[in-house]
Picture: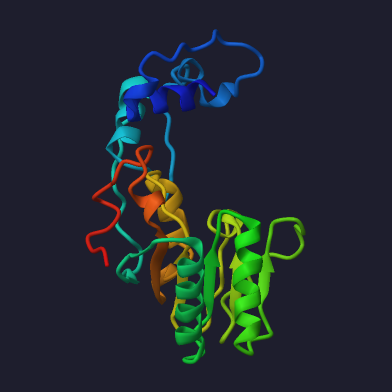
Length: 231
């Protein structure tokens, strides 16, 4: 909790006057700077280190430097242009259109949502288009995971953020396409979603289709390292 508080203070001016509580048994000690600094050597590995603010926190509070490890295999991930929509209806319809376009080529597709009700809306629209076999990963059934299903040839999968982190989706020979239905200034969350495709040297693509209010929200600071092209 203290780590999160320090992070928010560094990222946003409105949290500059945040008061940190004293250490208590409620805190996760393993991530506390005092605990980490008890070790002579500390090493960590992550695929989503975050932006310059996250690196600064590691340097200032944990005395840790960050280094980039070269990829084991080439990155064949293709970034498609942003699509920014005026409202939910327009966004969901564009998501459906994108799904159908890739599905006609038999590419496996994963769409990641923030809200469960949005999944059901897109699910209904796809069924109205005659698509019946749709996987829905809502995080309620721990035995039903996207790892071995979402990457199958012609597979269409709709899921929550549970699909965007900690999943190792085994894709077919065809490129795996990922659609993210929202935008957040937290680059780690976005990059974790991007990382579901084109793993281990495979081919794949991704695209963000989000609401204009999300993209230009005052609470979201645009991270120019996240993307270079907006449509």
